[in-house]
Image 1 (cartoon, rainbow, N blue to C red):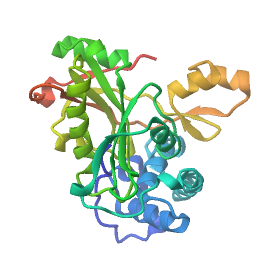
Image 2: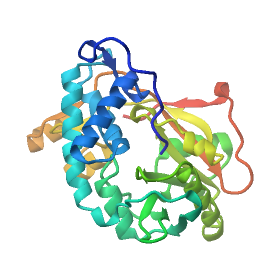
Image 3: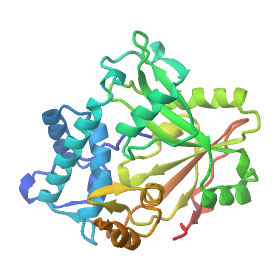
Length: 312
């Protein structure tokens, strides 16, 4: 998971009259960044986590054109900050409080309970991937994770089949970096250093594995910079589908299926009486980054990247 892109300076136009779009916000527009920082200070939460959670919610209130009203942005920021504040309080004993140089951090295989607590409370999806191996860079005095990721066998058939056809890697030899979380005290290059450690560990302990994959969601402000710094390559993209929401809160298709025994919003509404809705504005593609576990990872030129469609 890479940091949010740095956007342009705040426009001279009064903030109350600025028109913001989803594209502005995910690109790190100056006004959006300013509002995130201010809200994070008021609620005592980490700005980066607040920005990502808010970006996940904004497609629910955006118009078809992608335009966002200032009052809707303020409301989503406030709601996300309040929820993040409550979630953060549940794992205070895991939150690192001091910034340490990158060279002082230690790569470890993280305790499952600690990783699940961090992903279940602080990650924007608020869930851990069951059956994962979890790795972290920990601080020297308390061994608290500064950045943490989970790795599990790839179970996204659409992506696995396309990668296997195009690059000749059997699906059963692909592993997915399914969750990444970095605290704001993480130094520069912490995520790429963690990914390098994961690659070395997987080479030793998973000899049958050949490829690491991950999904980079541009709609949440992620750019893939940490993966590129770790020598991963952008190999393909997946066309977007609408974000899903139940009672005003984002929910993944996997979570919808587990919670309501269906992937249909209409069925969830009918069976449980929930407010189930989906985003209307156009979303950006998901980028699939990959890293071979042995030997260099070849670059794929933009014209050679496949763009695949999600199944409904």
